[in-house]
Length: 356
Image (tube, rainbow, N blue to C red):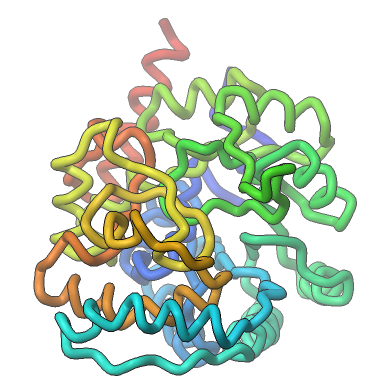
């Protein structure tokens, strides 16, 4: 078993290590450090405007001349229900008052506007790797990106999603298990209208057997053992999220980093109260604020827009109880080190296992 795979060849990287596109928590320093250390750094551009993304790319290109990736959220087809939104606004009013933030207005076109602008930027800047979460972009978008020379990566949480991504023309697929922190890339639901919750160990080999393109394992992976396990399951790279969230270059606040370091495997839970889309984070009072809520949670990105100001204000005030604390299911394995040192340790651990 070797650390050179089709993914390292496709992406032009030394090691099959990919830093997840954690929207809101990546920085140019993190992305560039990962790439300079032999992995693939990735901008979490899900919430960025094209102008913000352009500035990030400029800063990264000043720090590295090696390949990096950009992760984009495929726009949703959420339906705006005024009564649903009004009910949620009322439920959130005490929290807005607590942090003295005004009632937000919902912008139903911002998501698509930012996505379309980002695609134009990917082509203009000839970004080497473009990754997608929450669905499949249009065929015209895929074709244009491929013509620009980009390697395209889709995110799947079931075999069905992986097959759809391969059919659409993705060059590689992230098989993201339910252990992953934050939002997962699900774009299908089960019979109970719930997102799939298949564990990484089960998902990866089934996806590997179902598709021909390279597979990237994700979800709960934190160290060299996770990398070797991914390769043993047939994946050709590992995507690490929470592991990079606590590194020195991460954009996560000290508050959020400490919450991960103080947590254990029992505390991360899956909830849709923050954004309208299910995501894994550490339990706190924001989640319990919805324990008796009888209404429907507005879909993403509506709920996300309704709660953003509250969460940001809580984080600024150092209040971990009312902001999101994304974390995968392996927080005990988190380390407070530089991203370069994390990659060095992952590679050393993997090589030691492979040589034993």
